[in-house]
Structure formats: structure tokens, C-alpha cells
Length: 154
Image 1: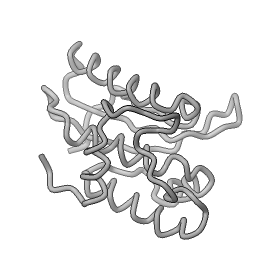
Image 2: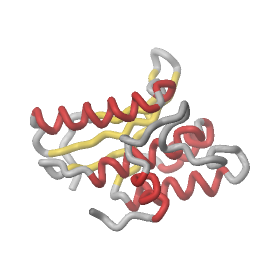
Image 3: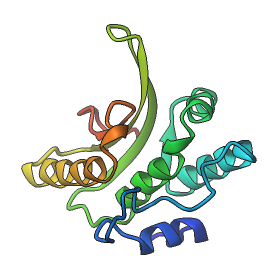
């Protein structure tokens, strides 16, 4: 397991098996109010980078998170889940802001890449995506955990 910042350790202590009470299991009281949002965005980006995720455009991600602060913790949690899972293949995590020209919307995509897209890998990735979607269904149009079937960069 990688050495993770304390806030991610706290998030992972409230794993997906935690009982929810109407709000996402990963919600932290007061964390998503607008006061002090900029430092929270910077902390989220530092955490994501510490988890060895590659961010396509930090500026685009900052702008998106400023507009969608309710995704801050979910994004960190998704990257942490990828980092701590015991994948049978070596994986890389890539974070993109995707613009959908048909619906004129944007969303954050966490793509998990591997050299071999085995059935076991795809099943585990689908399970992770389903678990995250089930916790907060309203985020599914702005937040995606999947793969783009590209080869890892490193």
C-alpha cells in the first residue's frame, strides 16, 4: 500500500462498505461549502498526484472542481481506491475533463489503464465504477470511473 496523506487514510477508513445515511459515505461535514474552496481544491489535486494519478490539465480540473465542489471528495476517493486495490495487472490512473459537444456538458473522467485488458481487470473496474455510482447517483453525469483502453504511458 502506498504512503497516503492522512485525509485519504480517513476516506479509506470509511470504505464503500460503510452504511450511508442519505449522503455519500465519503462526505465530510462542512468540507463542501464555498468558504475556503480554493485550498480544498489544491489539497485534492495534491492528493490525486500523491496517489500517482496523472492529470491531463490541472487548470481545467481546478476550474471544473470550482464549478462542481461536490465532486472534490469523490474524485480523491476514486483515485485512492484505484491506488490501494490489488489489481492483477499494473495500472495507471489518468484524470481528464471531458467536454461532450452533443449535450454541451463537461465531466471528470478517471481512466484506469493497463497493458492487458483482461476480463478480470474489466470486471473489477466495472465493480469499482458501480460502487461509486451507487453511493451518489446524481454524480453519474459529471463523474466517470472507467478505462479508455489506451496503453499506460510509463
